[in-house]
Image (cartoon, rainbow, N blue to C red):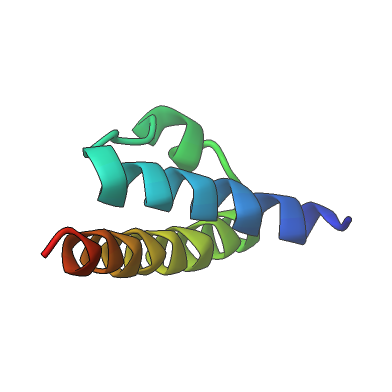
Length: 64
């Protein structure tokens, strides 16, 4: 797995955790990333929060 992919998946996991429970990633770690890695992290984060939103909607739909 490439380093860029690693940063994307790290962002995805952080985004899902944020969308699911409100866990906020450590800003200092994100700021220490290179601009390219930060961009990959943020792309993953956006997709992770969207996945958590969709998963939450599916759970809510199943509880009706």
